[in-house]
Image (cartoon, rainbow, N blue to C red):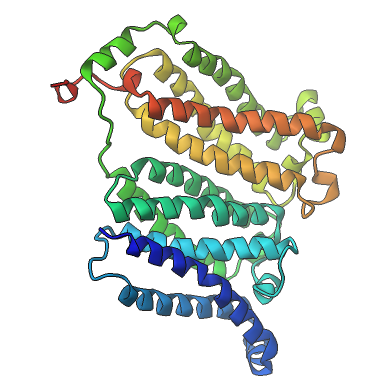
Length: 381
């Protein structure tokens, strides 16, 4: 298939920049729009619906620009829309930090207050950079007829972590009483994304390893696999760390928990509730993951390790990016920010906690022989 379809999606996503500027200028320059929006008291919602209408028009126009042979995979069109929205999120994040001005000023002032928190800033940047790159890679894979299951599973983990923390944080945080219509419209995005997750899971795995390689890898003892041994050694303190931070947000009276909150991560007590939900999710899901990953590194033939490490590494990358960024961001009240003398330790520990699972995911994806089962389908000719 020609690459024009993927190129068209990329160009469509960039059109969001002039569209945001146009709508923002239109609202601020036209008194009629202002009066109407303030009278109905739903300016952010009106801006949202106007943007959606523009997106639909652009999508229909792009359909005629693309070649007659359009991709049959429905996720192509889902990711095309998401790529457009990712650029919008990047614009929102940049304008919230006063790096640019005049693109979404009206929306930022009138949107739900959750978007203006430090956590909201970080997920805007994550969606506008990392998710945007993943959407383009998956669109390119669909265009060329390649498998995108690995990237898709990484996105699934990242999306699920973002959605769980953001939705629960909105509901139980200090802005829980200010949930507006946009929050419920966000649920439509969640529903479509969950459908996309199931579509990705249903795709067949593309692992193709010779039977002799599998048998040789599984006969190798742990002592002769130093990299796996290092991962096992890492998983034990990582499990303790995620459980410890879960106890901290549950107000454990231990002097260790209180001292850690005061000197290293006061953001865990932020009233926005995002860090609390983040740590509870990590304790309840990452904790069991570390235990079963220990089993998967010790016992050969655990094929589920390949998918599980992709999911967890995507989720943890998103979680740690948001947590580290929000802990240091100026939008976080000063009393909840990491103290200056503790920042090197805080950054080092949290970066290690985020990066080692990425290395484990890379190891499982590039050298999967130990985790595969020696079935006749994998015999060499």
